[in-house]
Amino acid sequence: MVHVTLIAIYLTVIVAIFVVAFTTLAWMVDSWRSPEAKASTAFPVPDEPRLSFSLLVPARHEHEVLAATVGRLCEQDHPNFEILVIVSEDDPETAAVARMLERAHDVVRVVIDENEVKSKPRALNTALPLCSKEIIGVFDAEDDVAPALLRHIDATFRQSRAHIVQGGVQLMNFDSSWWSVRNVLEYFFWFSSRLHFHARLGFIPLGGNTVFVRADLLRKANGWDPECLAEDCELGVRLSSWGARTAVAFGAALATREETPPSARSFFKQRTRWSQGFLQVLRKGEWRRLPTAGQRLMAVYILSMPFAQAFAGVLIPISLVTMLVVKAPALVVLVTYVPLLPTIATMAIEVLALREFRREFAVPVRLRHYLILIAGTVPYQLMLAAAALRATARELRGSRGWEKTEHRNAHRPAALEVEEARS
Image 1 (cartoon, rainbow, N blue to C red):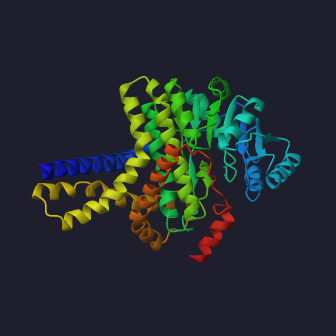
Image 2: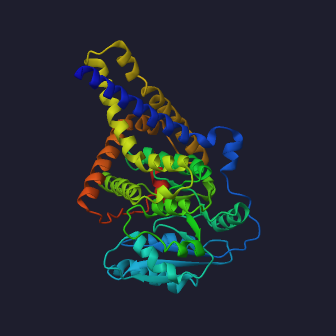
Image 3: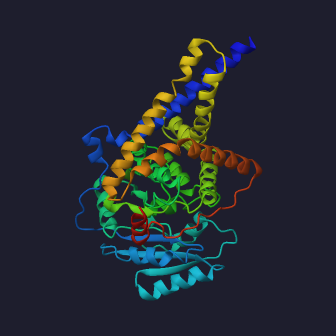
């Protein structure tokens, strides 16, 4: 009886892994299901701009990257925008760079974050009352933003009549570490495909930057949740529950370019923060106010996805070993193979996507990058699993301090040229 129970549990786990792997694969390729679907993800053709924008740039210990980011933002070819750079009173180096930028550019204003506890949502909420424009956008301190972006966002708001517009974000330095090529592809799938699927469904966990919200709606929502470690996701869930419409658009030329975390430790902490933030959003329960049962079910699934994916990533190699060394009925052995089908298909899609990323972003992807991509599948999943476990432990302990990701400008064109020369 015990033996039968264990087999039943094992088969249930295997089926769960298959569901996670299959849905992940389906969402990864959603935008490529037809030429029409792919075309629908693009920005509309911009016309005469009519809206105004307040762009928020929270920057803490970002003196190395802030000047390039804000300088690039100042190049926007939109006629009506302001840039609010938010710095902390205990970070004089970054504050000095921000003041220099304020003197050099009329559109730049410096906002001082004097919150005792520092976090991105608290910094954003500090600047919210000072925003004077119709649309509020958020960028990270290392972002490389296309000069034409605001004109396209302006057109997207008016043509879609959306309350929120999510633009594309793309990590660029795929050659920096063994995990960076996988990290880069995650972003590529997320912003070019998955978010479009979620927007159609009426439930979307927003990205952390290149997101734009109508100012009146954001003020009505009292801004960002200061306690949440995934303030972007939480805001998207909360506004979705209110019935807010989100438009998502992606194009390589307009994607905001960023860098992967510079070290394994930094990447691990970043994923811990994201996973813990998803747990907080799940626990907070705003998703229960979504209008349909399908949306609520999707919300629970998406907010649990980091843990489900990590769980699946760990159990797939375990199931392979079990299949080889444990004596079991033939049916059990056959079922063990089931999760391998979408997993192998996913790896094949990732290889094709890396080729597509190379084409769209005109970067020098080599054979070794494809080999690293494949070889890193299991170690990457193990890192995500460990981060999910740490996130759970931190949340149970009530440890919710903001673990910041450092930036080094590895995604800027000069850095990428160095990588290309090395290749």
